[in-house]
Image (cartoon, rainbow, N blue to C red; front, top):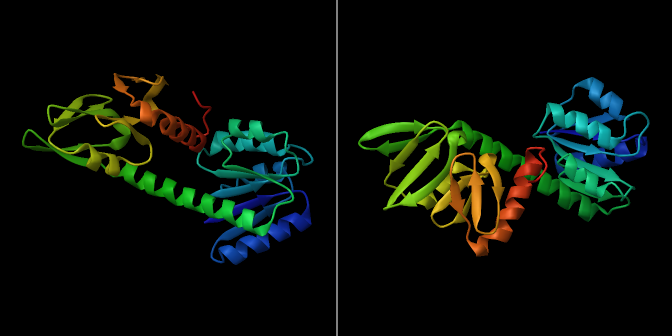
Length: 238
């Protein structure tokens, strides 16, 4: 795991570095005193602790440039400036720590960031693993990233993919567990891929091909999950 600290105060850089080394002694920690230095380095850390008020490019400008190169980087702003908190969502920030903060809060946020990193890696591994479906006596390989949504109909699961539809006898629960965190089950009969959502309301999710039903009791949690998905991808929420 690679972690970068970008802050124009040497004392802050050293202090954060010491905390991280105590928490994760096997991780690599690199230091930058400005956004310009970080950008010129072409560094691609897994987790970035980023100050906002710095000479040259400030933290927000730096984060925007980095997002153009790396959608998966976990960005945590560490700053004394509270007024940028809403702008942080525009660059898909994972969290916004306001100085001063105590060790307990810092460790809590870092542990959550590391957990999120592991979840993304697991999701990426799942995405790269094709699903083997038995349909009409044939074994068919389906890439989860190509599935727009799935639905249950007449005791069968129907996968609506980019190019075709595949139906097989199976359980939606098993598919949900195998599909990964880019998918959400808004209704007992539907599983949708966040990547193909065009718009949604409290009753229906409209996708690039087809639509899925939304259970009222799932609507609130769906919105939270979709927001987290868009933050991971560095996208603005719809």
